[in-house]
Length: 150
Image (cartoon, rainbow, N blue to C red):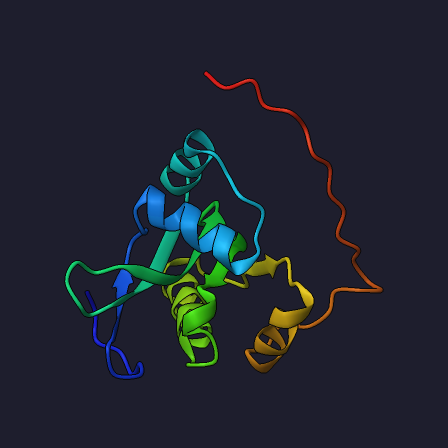
């Protein structure tokens, strides 16, 4: 755990929540649910992550975010989410600031490209933290494929 300036009762933890907490936070916050295999591989394949837990025992993750990246100059912030009962307390802001600080600290020397997908409720948080709309210079695109598992 690391020091933080969070509201009383919370701690910021470097690393990833349990798979069960990851799935719960995604589902309860309105993100698309993921199965156990997807959640496990997503967390294991991340470059960096943090979560916020309640200080009470057993500690339960209530907010999270992670970075997918190559360590050179491409970084994607993903899975930014906070359980509804814990929103509007600055937790998402704390997670985002820590993720960006770690990219700045560990990325290869030179300018890094950091992107994220912002839903409408999160847009204000991202703008406040220096992110800008990529349009019209860059347009995000997506495609879904069906994984077969291993």
